[in-house]
Image 1 (cartoon, rainbow, N blue to C red):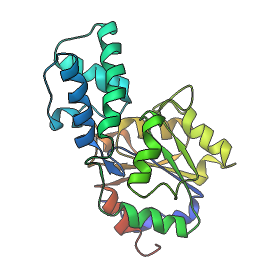
Image 2: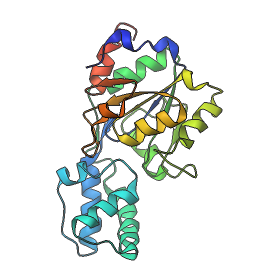
Image 3: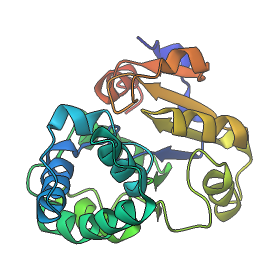
Image 4: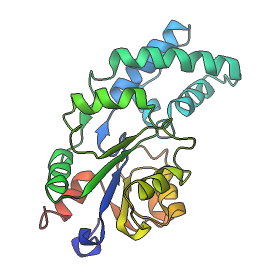
Length: 230
């Protein structure tokens, strides 16, 4: 969907990537972890398609959406299930999660071009290093931030403002790549250009309607559009 001439990477020093739904299809393992937690606490299991529609705003929001599926809104119960999920997900973190096509080549190419690569996810940071290592992409990122690394997470602009400060960038030197409203709004509020990937975990939101700077079908389409430079 995007055109190569629309995205001149020479303008950008730092490329910031979301994780789940952008670089990695993690829904199979999130479903395993969530179902383990639910069954442990006497709730029914849910499907991968259910989970695919709930991912994108951090683990607590995932649990809130899962329990709302069962018409359960009690904050104490949500906290209990969330705590169990943090235990359960560790058991399945690297079972079935896979990189999307084109991710490895894109990251390696950008790294070789000496672009500064940052990972900015709402996933709790305790899960991120092991997953990146398992997927063999842990050596390309200069900075990795989870949803609990700072006092605010996406869509709040603080994480991207922290990136700008860390690398002494202006907003014009930074590009945010993601698959959800949280990514696009975070970028817009920080004054940073954005790439919206339509095939991800967007909770049914029309990302193009949010007016991101660039729109691509998926990460592989983005990679192919840059193949002349990478």
